[in-house]
Image (cartoon, rainbow, N blue to C red; front, side, top):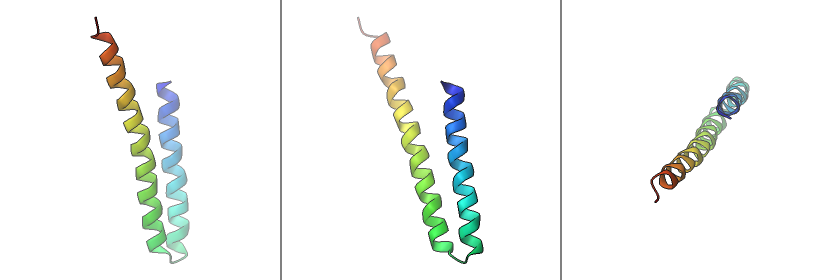
Length: 64
């Protein structure tokens, strides 16, 4: 599961980077910045879900 998650995050990063380069070359810097922000938010949502799962696992381990 961990390696799939790393590939998922890397894939999102590569996709956002390519689209970002295309937008910047087209002269649409504002849209490129917004796209970068959206990419960061998507990755943060994935990380937050993983942190939530971690806390749930820790909670179940220490339950009696």
